[in-house]
Image (cartoon, rainbow, N blue to C red; front, top):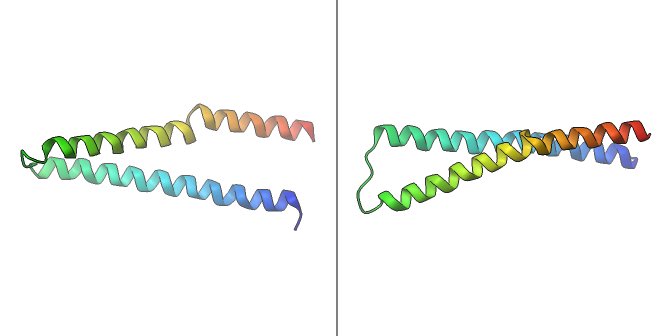
Length: 86
């Protein structure tokens, strides 16, 4: 195998992992939101659960922003420049 073939294979695996990670975190967040809609939190656990949900939401925002926001555009730009340099 040549180096470009190896790099291409790694990129495909990484690309698939991005989608899997995004899907898993999104589903987890949606499940938590649905649970909040149908179950009342006990007073003693209310603050802890809200902190955990806030952390999950922040993680979701970070993942989506990094992989589908400006970093994705920057990666596409770098690939275009690399193709032009070949």
